[in-house]
Image 1 (cartoon, rainbow over the protein chains, first blue to last red):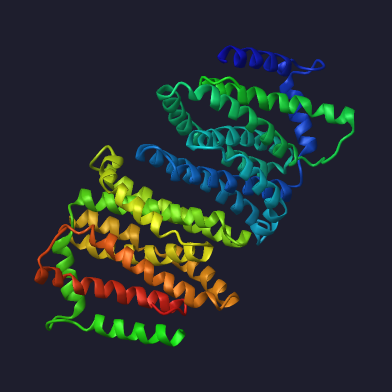
Image 2 (image 1 turned 60 degrees about the vertical axis):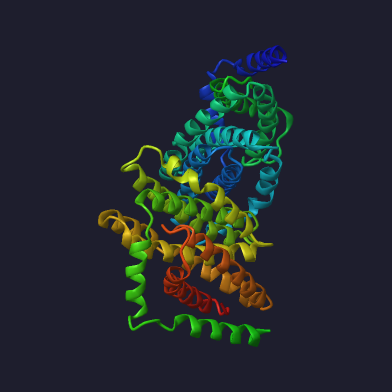
Length: 240
Length: 240
């Protein structure tokens, strides 16, 4: 089983990280994400509500944490996630009295994403917190390049704090060390999550529908997101 | 129905607030609660874990909030509750490396209390957040009189911030105005909660078992807690 995961992962990653054209992938992506950024309103509405959804995932994980230590650690991560949500709401409220008005168009889609990423137990829920916040923070930081510079700088500062992820890593590593059979189950769950998370990220772009060649231009962005996700799963000793 | 509540409440309150002996109730209570305070460790372990439990109630209420506005308001209240928990943990960690060790003896009892106070829907859950935090903050602030003075001052400052309660009041009043039939249901639910909440408060005292006459000396404390609770329910237009 482990070998199959290993092999499949290597194949995916090696195909995915090969740069197209002659640009370095980083340059290609930065330029393209700037072009594809939604309006500041749409960006903040989605980023703020996604952060609230992530907080709810972490809150749910607290309720079923196997130890009081784990619950206490999660309470820290949940507080950080809630602080990010409130910082994004504060960013909205610099220009607009109702943060809710800006979040509302995205709540149905994000609530649906939330429901299908809750998993079957504490371990899967915690993996969701790790995988989803890793990919989405990464994505929204890159996407911020297309926002007005001052807002971009503030938003990037908010989203770049990944102290919460480090705390989750410690919990998940301890869980996997204690129950090695978790590794393949969580690796599978992680793959399920990547698909759904990339879809919700894709839906945040300013271009809902693209023709084939233009859609292909998005590929390097997702390739980079997947490569960063793969590195985060490596940290857990899990194949992506 | 409303009359029955009204009559029953008046009777309870008038019997309950009558002072025994010649002391004013405030003086009687303050002296007695000082005598009955648990050790600082036991106080902080229980107060911190109860605050975490309250946070989880508010987090659960967020998940079923009927509007995005309500969810956003609850996210503020939840953040305040979590901040109180972390401030109490920080108070523990001034003297003791593991806050979890101090909370652990109380988690089973408090988790059981948490389970039976979750109610049937969002309105009951929100009422739980209001009633339980109102009574318990009140109780622990009074109980702090028996702690070492510096710790008492810090803990009292943490627990005295009731900005969260004010936000819940606005949500609950709006809900009751919109659905007047809620008033009698939530009044009943509030009565159920008072009993359980006073029991968990009683269990925090340094005297698990008292003889009849000594147990009677606790009455004025609970009388005061109930009177303060009654005032909080009045604010909602509900009979206690």
